[in-house]
View (tube, rainbow, N blue to C red):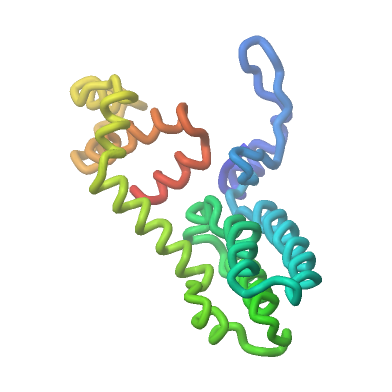
Length: 217
């Protein structure tokens, strides 16, 4: 169940949901595409899981770093740790600074291990020498890249061609009937933009939908 604190308190007495004649127990967490979604979409559990995994691999890399040349160690660091930090990081756009800082500390530790520098050394010059963007900027870059692909390349046309079966007139008629209220032109236009994303959700899952909805927000 996902909602605001007030909504979650109001629904605190609900323990099961009936789906297809089956009672499903509610859970405070859901893992989809290796991303943990919590009831308040804070992604605290997801950040903690990723940091724990990355710190383990950094600890292993620290023990074998002196045996590896720099190019091999860098490839290993980017593929094992960096890929985990970058995976679905666009869902953290607008997340709490404390969550972003946890990822940043992992990246700083990885840079020090890779360049064999002491832990007290400031990590910003190391990141610059490795040509690594800080975590917050990597998230913004990911969102910008996805936005460009969605708006400028073939993704929207592909989604609309294969997934969207609702015509503009049908969508306006459905929106006009919803809850007996009238929608402004801007709201209808936004609904038309979100309709392909709902279809994309059925194909690729919740995380992709949340990412793309964030881009259209």
